[in-house]
Image (cartoon, rainbow, N blue to C red; front, top):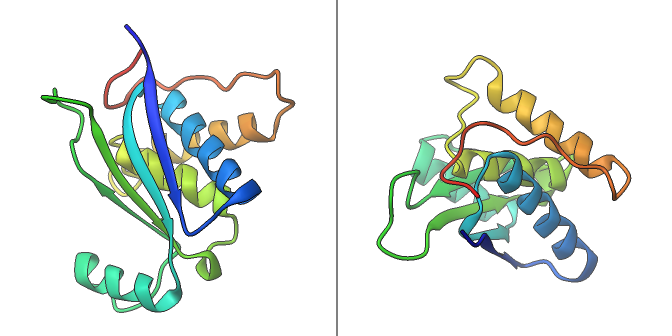
Length: 146
């Protein structure tokens, strides 16, 4: 089976875009997701507030929102994982928020699990901070894998 993911980053370029792509890829690998497409978009507080109000009923800006598309079931074509929207002024750490958002796209939910998502998030972040030859420990759940 071939593994292929496509990660697009909007409203960021250069080193920041590469860091966010690497964080997203690490989260996908840890969640066991080996194929699909996702987009990461950076927005201002006003846009994030509007999205949060529209989709979650909360009239305030937040750090990260995730909008899953295909879920974890079979798909007719390439898997569309969804979108991660980041609001840099609300994020303490854009890489951490990216990992968090991507894990939501992979089916994790810290509001309903027993700490599983946050534990995996921390393993991914630890792997990203480790020397380049270190490997993060993969998770056991995700939207499909290689």
